[in-house]
Image (tube, rainbow, N blue to C red; front, top):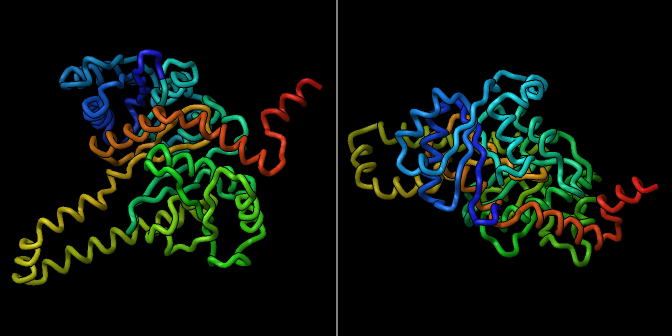
Length: 357
């Protein structure tokens, strides 16, 4: 964060299905909500400038920077890396790496963003792999979940690091002082699951751990809000997330069909309109937009590519919260505390000693 207290947000102006219009309108909403934020907007100046000129709040707090190239949804990560220095996505990430911006937000290609951000920002000291994290509505409030696809296979150390990063995320974005963390498993009993899961659980149960470890949780515990943070490998997490999203769409479709079956059903829908409105607001996916690549040496937020300006503004809010909370510093601090509790030499210290030798 700048010494003036301003938060500088780097935006991939050309990323997303509805870019650049959605990006500009979303940034305008965010600027009203977060008046201490300013923006570096990367992309096609000829397309961006007229859009920014029409905004109410953004036009006084935005610098447009020309980016000659764009990462498309069809680009493979290797292609995106070749475009890193000339694309709107790559230049926005570089702004964070160089210290010109505090965070980067993009609605572009997920795989390309992960690859480009990992190379451009690198990982935090003590982090072996970054993880993709988001948060979901539950019966008790909201729950963070990671990894959602960045790492298809994980060992115990990876899961433990995800637990630490997820805990700090819940503190900064969800506002939970002492978030509980659970490992997703096929059963809640201690003897269940793979050796990897059991090893990770043993590490998280160590005395003086910075993580409030609940134990193992099952799939139905996610929506039940049993814990504040659900930790799993990227393969399982991605499958679980898609299953949750698909089930939500299924039931929404069933409800709509049911209220079209008769005149009385339609009348019932009208009479309960205020309740349906509250339900719609509670489960509105735009409110939960903003996946974060945790573990990078800089805040990088991935907005859903098909969102609108309201959803994009929520993703910008996630980025602002992480910057204000000094998320990266807290992750390094808590990882150090956990390794000390485990009697391990911190990775950064070990690397330094090896280099000196």
